[in-house]
Length: 378
Image (cartoon, rainbow, N blue to C red; front, side, top):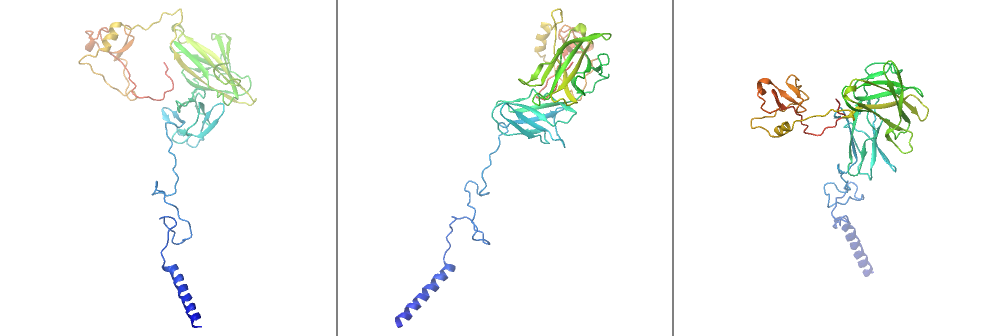
C-alpha cells in the first residue's frame, strides 16, 4: 500500500512538470527566423526572401525594354497627338496575327515585344484627320513607328458637280471626297504653281477592304472637256483585295505652269452601303524635265569653290525661322550660282566673293534635329 502511494505521487509530480513545461519551455521556430502573427499564431508566416528582404514574397516583375517594344507614336502638327475623349486604336497586323492597343493621352501605344514584321494603322480616328494607312511598317529592326496625321483641307471654291463646275484646289494637301451613291463622281481642278511632278494618291485603308476608289482624268479646255485615262491602281493594295488605291501623276513643264488639270474621283462600296469616303493627297513629288526641255540649274564652279572656303572675317548669323522672316529686298537670286544671296551694293559693290557686283554670302538653312514633317511643297 505504501509503495502504491509513492508511485501515484511520483506520477502526479511528473504530470505537473510536463504541463508546466508547455508554458515555460523554449519555442522552436519552424519557420526559420520569420515573424509570427501574435494575434493569430496558427497563421503560417511568409518566408523572408533573401534576395528581396524589403518586400518578401513579391515575385520579380520583368522590366520592359523600350528599345525592344513595338511602339507607335502619333503626331499632329509636329506634336504628339492627344486623342482626348476619342478612342483611337493602334493596330499591328500581318498574315498570321493582329494586335490592338488603345492610344494613350501621351500619343503613344506600346505592345511590348512581338515577333516578325507588321503593317501599322489606326482605327477610330476623328473625321477631321487623315493619314496614309498603307505606308507604316514595324519590323524587328525598326520597332518604333511615327504616324503623321494631317487635317482635311477645304476646297477653294466650286460645286464639284460636273467637269465645268469643278471643285477648285490650289494647294498641296489632303482632301476628302464624300460619295453619296454608287457611280457619283466629284470633280476637281488643280492648278500647279511651279513646274515639277505632282501626284494625286488615294488613302483608302486596304485592310478594311470596304471601298475601291477610282480617278477619271478629263482632258480639254474650259470650253470643252472629255474623258481621258481611268486610273484604278498604282497605290497600295492587298493581293486579291477589293481596295486598290490609285496614283495619278501630273507632269508640269515650265510652259504649263498655271494650267488647269481636271479629274474626278469616285468610290465603290463593297457592301453597297453609302456614303463612302475617299481621302486623297496632292503633293509635289519632284522636278520634271522632259526631252524637249532645256531647263538646268547652273552653278558657277568658282562660286562653289569660294563658298567652301570661309573667309577670316566671315561670320554666320543664326536665325530662328519660326520667329524671323527675311525680307527679299535684302536677298536676291543669282542666275550664275543658282542660289539666293545677301544683296547690298554698298557692302559687296566690289564683288568680294566673285559672285557678281552686290552679291554677298549664300542664304542657307540648316536643320539641326530630326522632326516629323508632312510634305515639302513649292
